[in-house]
Image (cartoon, rainbow, N blue to C red; front, side, top):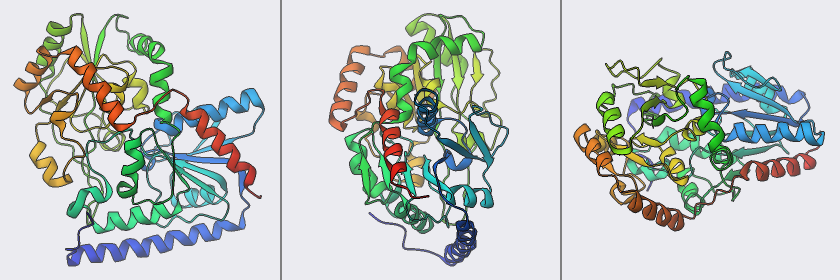
Length: 412
């Protein structure tokens, strides 16, 4: 395994430019060192600023705020976000994710906590603590060195640079304990806290299940299929791109098939990846349906999972988290060969996972019609055991204990 050694001239020029840009960015961090570190300050971000108040940082933030209210602590949370109109609790300070804002707030915070990489050129000061939550319990699509020769040299450089800054990576499975070494190109501390974003699945599923139906004015007994296609594009050799190709899922037929197999009245919740949702208003489907509700602009994927009765995706790792709480999951991979050619071999043989796999609409409808719940449960138990998945709804508490322990060690 390794990165692509066949760098052409354009790639080398791009790398030189990125390194020069990183050097310029680093100067801002050095200049901000005139300001003292505030050990109570925690800076957070999701999906490179494209996300909002969601994923694991959200649940750590909620636990920190709970400590402020119940225990009298004075945690100060600053959130870096690209779209400043996104909503956050009033106790959280949201700031535009610009170079100088990043440099100032990261340079003066005792703790950093994010679910994606920092910007290339970021500098950390002595005593500061960087906690990386990442954004998966298990993965289907390969990351890092697991992409083999499809892993761009620039992506390798950025990954290695960021990993040297990290103090702790959080893990919710034994599988991640091993994968992170090559996937994140990381040789530091991995701590088995569980995944904070999974806490809502363990602790609040019944509450969220009813809450969303009320918010969207649909009957309490309505069944929901959550369709969550994964992010396309990513770190390329010369520039970052986002694939916004049209979905080929036949949603009208899908709803009819769900009602035939499982009974009840069904709706489809559409949820795009935050980095895709930031680039477009909705997924192109050429279909208008009163049974489809676009929830892409909601920042927290896992509270949406908690509302679902069935989960459908192509290669999103979120299907494992739906599976963890017993939600039937289906994979619709109509571009499987092309995706592997572009991304690299998948972590798992999809046909050995609990999830029925379909390559076209006819296969998808057949898989739903023939869904075997007993077989699904048995394969789920086997998957969790083989990969050492541990989620007990207490991950956020463990992370906050770690944060408060580190804060006590910081000299202001």
